Length: 236
Image 1 (cartoon, rainbow, N blue to C red):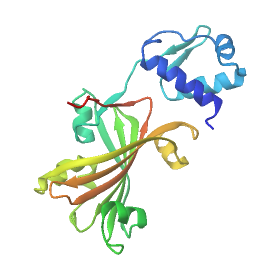
Image 2 (image 1 turned 180 degrees about the horizontal axis):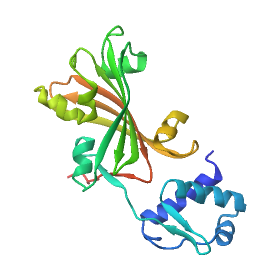
Image 3 (image 1 turned 90 degrees about the vertical axis):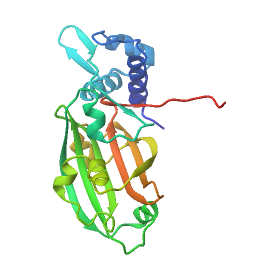
């Protein structure tokens, strides 16, 4: 069962996202929130503290707690744009830090996702993606060594998709699964958030136009700095 303070976090985030509380608005004081939710002051403070840590709220001593300016980037799930192209298109500055770059024998899950032989080697790459200097997303990517034998650390500091397409390979699609998660300590540390902070976990399997799977990625997004955009249409 989800902890009570996270339910308060979810409720306040929803009210911010739906415009109940707008940028610069003061949210209700602790005394009112503990009455509304029927919880202790400690629980309310834990929820508000998490929202402050995630840059959704900020405190002004002697006045109260306010909604912070929205800095989020938007990910359009229907267009397969790279991180650099997507962030630049929104007038923000993307940068990348390489945390891990290694070649290894994959575990059974990666073998299954990439549809390769169990003895085939893969690149395991961890990249911390930043927007305007702030840690935004941690990407763990697995790429078959057989497809990208000349891959370098420098190439992965830039756009992965640009590197691939420069080799004459045509990317067709990425199948993505989105889910909430309380991530491991390493992920939280790299993203600069507390261990009990919720994240969005996105699993991605990339395919070329001939059906070859070229990528399996596990991506962790900070909830307060990234939103996902979907379009739902009724059938004809």
